[in-house]
Amino acid sequence: MTGNYETILVSKADGVTTVRFNRPHKKNAMNPTLHREMYHVLDELEFDDETQVLVLTGEGDAFSAGQDLKEYFDANKDSPRDREEIRRISHGWRHQKLYNYAKPTIAMINGWCFGGAFTVVASADVAIAADEATFGISEINFGSLPAGLVAKVVSGLMLPRQALYYSMTGEKFDGRRATELGFTTMSVPRAELEQRTLQIADVLKRKDPRALRATKELFKGVDLRAMSFDDSWHWLNARERQLTLEQKNKNWMDQGVAQFMQGNYRPGVEVMPKSE
Ligand code: COA
Image 1 (cartoon, protein in one colour):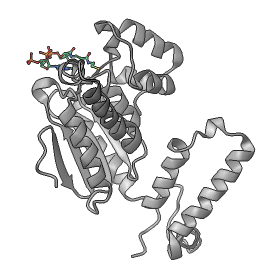
Image 2 (cartoon, helix red, strand yellow):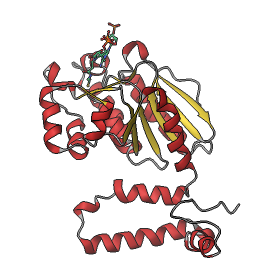
Image 3 (cartoon, rainbow, N blue to C red):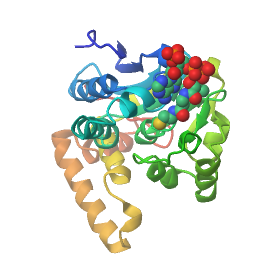
Image 4 (cartoon, rainbow, N blue to C red):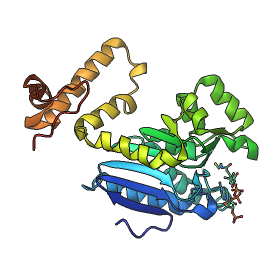
């Protein structure tokens, strides 16, 4: 399952699965094969017991130079059918599967990140960039616009005036600036990127996976900002009851709260000890 891909590399260690875009000679631009392979691998890993946390990154000096301008756009320009098919797959893995993934996901931005690659970063739960990485909403530079949901994700995550500025100018920015703008969660020196990513993965691995999934869903599956206070109250209560049912006979009340009352741990500073 993990070996036979042409455009991605999959590696597993200690519950953390890393999927690497593997077209370094093309700066990991996303061509139709890469989209198909990402669509497939995300399905596989979602039900893979060895995968507790998913990390996405790029081989070589690029995270991804966005859509492959030749193979994604130019090659399909005269074939509406092929273009539509690959648009759906490309949309499906990034905005449906990855955005709503059942497991925690981390985008580790190691280098160049342009255009369509912004949507991969935006769909991951945590985005950790190298300080030295280079970002650009570059569509304006080739006479286009940040379509394919790029404008949607940057307007949702970045400060509004900055999103417009970088979309209109195509000016590039580094990992530190990406974090100031709210686009990435944090940035660290390139030399520390893998280590910091694994530390975060380790923290996520120790949480109850059902509680983690429910927490993601609160923020990603549902737009709490668009709900009234009353609607939020009812929805969150319902989700809490559902989580308790999913956790069956070791729900957070019985396990997490009981262990705290027994003095076994302090949840403000520790995660609950595993009972089995
Ligand atoms: N689509 C298709 N091919 C791409 C690509 C893309 N988005 N980005 C890079 N490549 C290819 C180049 O055409 C080149 O191929 P070649 O060796 O067959 O000529 C190869 O990758 C290396 O790129 P190159 O431009 O030589 O590397 P560089 O280090 O000088 O510059 C970038 C790197 C990323 C700054 C530059 O390639 C670039 O601007 N790419 C386009 C980025 C972009 O605007 N993406 C938005 C798409 S939605």
